[in-house]
Length: 144
Ligand SMILES: Nc1ncnc2c1ncn2[C@@H]1O[C@H](COP(=O)(O)OP(=O)(O)O)[C@@H](O)[C@H]1O
Ligand SMILES: [Mg+2]
Image (tube, rainbow, N blue to C red; front, side):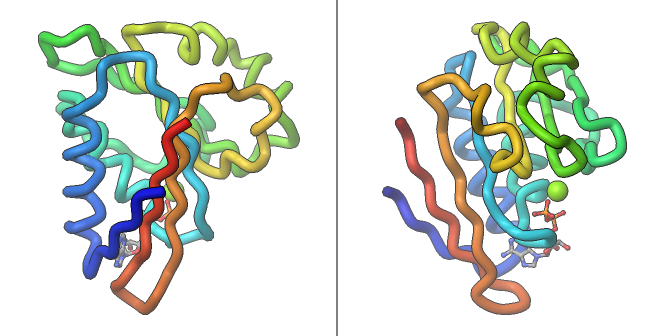
């Protein structure tokens, strides 16, 4: 497991950006961490790295938000899910999320993934973010 310490929100966004730039299409990111840990901050960077030009916001009230990329790569869209308000994975299936999870043209990221773990594909990239202090975070990355 990879471990990185970030000392401010920009470093977390930059880490997301670097990882976004390396995506080949079809990745599913599973985000773990408390409220305010930095999940959305990380994904704002990731989206930029994928070539999303629009501002990525917390999708809490929409649950699922789709962004087009301006990229020449195979990645054509970023699917941002916030499962906080969901009861189970079935709620996500009802939203038609399988279409995005299975698409090579989509990179999907799920905040509060604990709620919907039952429907995840086998191959995911897990991101764990923990607060160390007001402005420091430890970020663990597990690919598998
Ligand atoms: N090292 C850091 N990494 C990420 N966010 C940080 C960091 N230090 C402070 N912050 C602040 O913590 C908050 C994280 O919020 P957000 O990304 O919305 O969290 P989450 O989506 O996990 O609820 C932001 O206000 C951000 O500025
Ligand atoms: Mg968030």
